Image: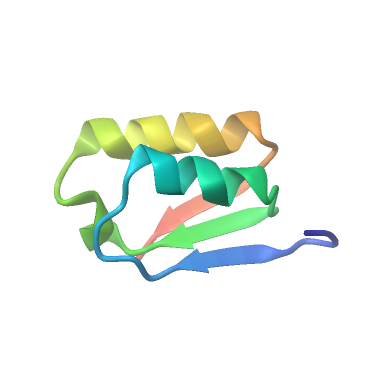
Length: 62
């Protein structure tokens, strides 16, 4: 992806595998449903670390 692309994930059950796959696309921004983390703060923290290492500048949940 190029030029400030945004990746929006509406998946209701996020996994580290899915988060890694999104990060591999190297978007500038990632938006996920908060409910996809099923209340797991650890999964959310890991998601932030994964996408940051791939150059994502903005990670948000809605």
